[in-house]
Amino acid sequence: MNILYVALKYDYGKKERGFSFEHNNFYDALSRMDGHQLSYFAFDEVMQEVGRDEMNKRLIETIKKTRPDFTFFCIFTDEIDAATLLEIKHSEATVMFNWFTDDHWRFDNFGKYYCWNFDYIGTTDSQAPAKYDAIGYKHVIKTQWACNHRMYKPTGIDASIIGKRVTKDFKYDVTFVGQPHGDRKQVVANMQAAGLNVQCWGGGWPNGRISQEGMLEVFSNSKVNLNLTKSSDMLSAKALGKVLFYRRNDQSYRAHHPKMWVANLKSLLNKKREQIKGRNFEVPGTGGFILTGDADNLSDYYIDGKEIAIFRTPELIEKSRYYSQHDGEREKIAKAGYDRTLREHTYEKRFNHIFKAVGLAK
Picture (cartoon, rainbow, N blue to C red):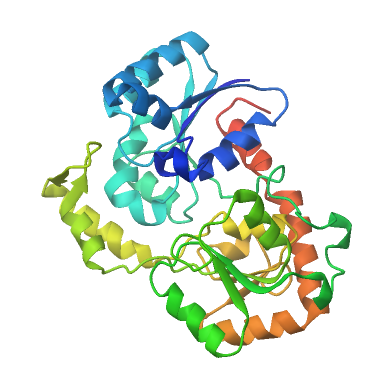
């Protein structure tokens, strides 16, 4: 299959931050799949070189030149004009698909407006298919984050020892990799005050940012990998400001049209719904044990207490201590999570499901 991939190459479009999540997961996984010819249109890189308007023109030119059977988009703002997308949709013989990343909270002010620009869309939100159906959009594929098992794999250990390790085999007790949003600093401080040896990486933590390879080494070599799902202060002044204003590509601010205020507020309030993230699959894929907050339909992918461990807020300290001290039980769960991830939750499997759903594979 001839595939054109259209997404950010760098994290938030900033080269100094390294490759984006999309590049390390979607693009890297697609590039390793057999039987496909893959072209890359990194709209952030092109836009920085020639500007937004010219980038849109070059996208159309690229599709005319490469003539893809399938165009995979991952856009989450208006980086690409709706007019550009509709021109492609109505004039070019390519199946246009967009992976919507945050339908749990962005359906009302983004998804339900932008879906019409694509032949098919993917969503990770269990409630979104019914919402799209209610507005008359029928081509929704329920998919989910996964593990790029070619990159997110056991690091610093031999895969054969997963499930058999004891305390002396680990470099770290309890770890967290991610931003210190919301109450995360206080949560970690409470755990440390309770005597747990918790180490954190990411911008805003004392350890600072960590490389991709370093992150995988932490996942593989921690007794307990935390996944703190509550990521932001929902009613902060900054969050409320985004209900009324938006930032343009030139970094200036403009007021949203009044018709968007209610939609933006609904989206803000829907942030309280915890959603599955890539971390839920990436940690088990490295052979690591994950202790995670619960999230929308997480139980459809892993069994709590058998393949992963789920905590509710009052249980976090107790479960972190328990699993850091009980090697046998923790390792049995880590091995089962690792096996299920490779069996069912890789991006190759997600993409093959999408190709079948759009009629491009059997």
